Length: 513
Ligand code: FAD
Image 1 (cartoon, rainbow, N blue to C red):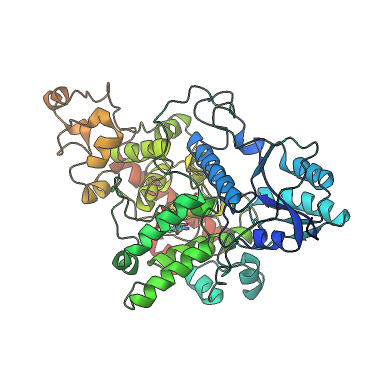
Image 2: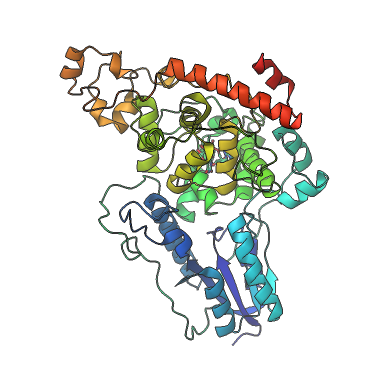
């Protein structure tokens, strides 16, 4: 047997072989390597009330995406002479058992800034250190180390994108060496190892074929998708958000790499590096914040602010969040969540969320604005929860950051600028193809009425086989009155916040007048 000691590579996110510093280090000087993934009931346990739609924390689309990513990781590990060891249970407990059982001398895992992992990792690290196990936990999920940026900024996270970019500089390059072989897996002892389970084996019942997202998980799929994107050099060089059509669903107008970044099937540093390679051949290209590189910087910006802001995921106790007296209305919330608001643009996007777990950025803007400061005046935390569960790219820092933004609770304060649930979508898709696809009940509604079907004469509704109020709901609010009311309430809340902390920008003052 080769000299060295056994090491354990704990996969959580970072589900990839390429640019994986923890994996690379785990191999160094090790005669056996245990690549482990723990199925965590906290995220994966079926919700007894919703067997066919997922757990209470994760929709089935995301669970399936994760399982596909694990199958792919297992295949890629096998090509290198190893395999993935899947265990089930509370990860801290399971990990500590494995460390003991396999006499592990080196534990490697990617650093994670999410509060859930921060707590979990402290428990595992404390045990490992006390048992004399070497721990290596590098930052490789983001371009930069959020802690470094916060330190450079005097201990506080930068609160604007521009100041973040100034502090950030250039990220570390991805690892240049490719892993070409891995040490073999050692004896498994009493640890209960399984293959990657199917959704059915996890306990999800009545799952219909064809109900899933079109996006398949895994590193192989991520790299294929990235290569296809990078081959379109002009497109990469001219990428400019927020231009782009949110209703383009057959061929989305952005990369749809977010779920792969979320699970770390794709390294953000490798992605960044590949864009730079394209830029070398296309010297005239867009720049941050609107460019493709600019999007990756947005990701790191939110990670940094989230990491350095206590209670980032709530309004109370969050120093960067405006305190707004959002209303509680379960019925309105349910109508929004289930895509039954009576506004086809909003309902089609929410249906896309349920069916695909992914929507274009501006589509997310539309429904988030509608739920909060635009029409329903419901708390952003409620919308955040729905996205958190159903998105396949659901990401703690980015999701909370964008909800804070869209609800004008932080970062962005022009609450008078509201997305119309009628004219915004129409601008991109006047015939309403996106609506017809996701809301087939409206498929025969003439284009003149597709965004406001309640205005169609009864004869038109009858001909379209869709009677409003019976086959498709009446609007839950009048948009014209709702925006007036929302603006008034936002104005009052902003004034009160100003009184409370004297922190109000010139822009806010303009809006209040
Ligand atoms: P592209 O435009 O191709 O961008 C490339 C990558 O840049 C993305 O994959 C993503 O990692 C990053 N990125 C792009 N836009 C943003 C942004 N505004 N903030 C941070 N990073 C960004 N994105 C998530 O990954 N997870 C979430 O949970 C999430 N929740 C959101 C909630 C709301 C209310 C809103 C308005 C946006 C949210 N976003 C979230 C941000 C954004 O909509 C998605 O990242 C993007 O639409 C993903 O598609 P893409 O990969 O094609 O993006």
